[in-house]
Image 1 (tube, rainbow, N blue to C red):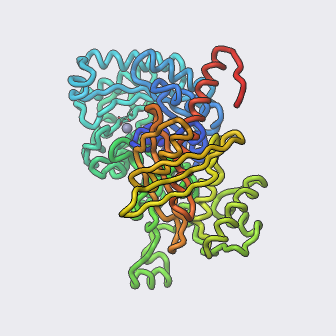
Image 2: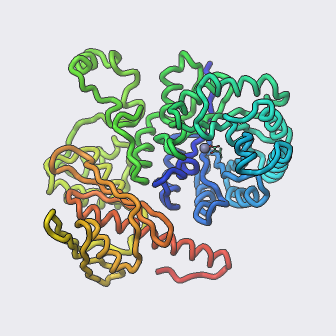
Image 3: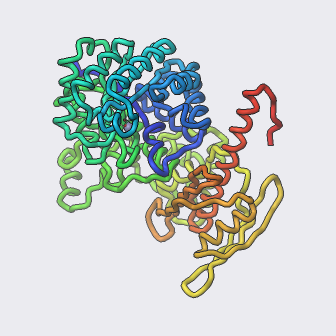
Length: 520
Ligand code: KIV
Ligand code: ZN
């Protein structure tokens, strides 16, 4: 009988800390619902003290996502812990996750506190957290570079004060697998009350060992793994959830562990995350990369055709990658579209199907074959969940190597139309300047990327932008067979998110004071 490994997903907290991965409330809620469908055990929904936006998303996720434990992060201070609890208290299964660094490097340079002071602070933090919540996780930040005897003392104190999970982070991705596994071995040997808590690993990928280190931790007594979808996270990222889960599944015989994750939901979750943040996974990424199941060499193709086992250690279906190659075109009807979406894992309601079908026919008029990737772009781009204040009605841009690029844009807002023109260092910049003139919200472009979502010269191009408005950064995306159209709509998507966040936070503040605000 295999032992259960608890999967703690921190995509919405550590993952969201990676540059360009910030998400708004609706996006986080959507991802949290998908993580629930994936059946992870714990979702770390955010760091409530970090900002009002973070607090609100942890609170909403705690309210809405009921079958999974919801964790909120807090430094080992009273203010952080109370704020985390405020955000979590409505959860069906709340968990306070409190942390403090234990390595001498962090104590000396960051905290400027002695080992004794940090030991006391950790114990006090867990005591307070436990007085509020039955499920408390304690993390010894930078445990991977901490003195082992000291780490044992801190862990013992945290368990004595009631910590139910002890998390050992390799915060800077410094450890190698044998070394990281050894930390768990020593903790289990030397900490007298260790059996009272579940041990957890939290690995960063700076040397590319995050998944290997997580497995080493499990082999030495950890029973929880902290990880993120697509491995996103600080710097080089965290251990990738799909890699950990599939390693445990594919090598079950060897490792003897199981998880509750529905692996067939992996691809959909990965795709949802990339489409929300614009952070695409590289083609050769294990499990979810475009080439993860593609066989190029003739000798491999021949082998796979004879028997998939020759070159495939798992099937694409086991991670939910659609393999049906039926291609839809302009003669395909609503029923075929509905069925295709079902096989991609999306059940569309009547209104969603109407909108998706309208977008599909528009696209099918422009290109001969509509592939699964195009359909996913329609669903992620066309069925937007953010109310759109500004709509693009018209865009015309010119450019070239001998002319000053210019653009004219027409937008509508509340039934009113505005037109502006601008020049720029290229048609995209000119378009964005014209949009800024209309909205009166000048944005600073942080990142811009475009890629083809399907095959051929008529492929749909998907544009992702990250832009900051008033110092807050927002992502936007749009897909179209015309790059300028996609670029303009992607930018407007970010503008609309900025407006929406402003309005939501203002409404929440007013609601907290017991006053109602007119909608509009
Ligand atoms: O990497 C780290 O140490 C963390 C902790 C806050 C758990 O993310
Ligand atoms: Zn981390």
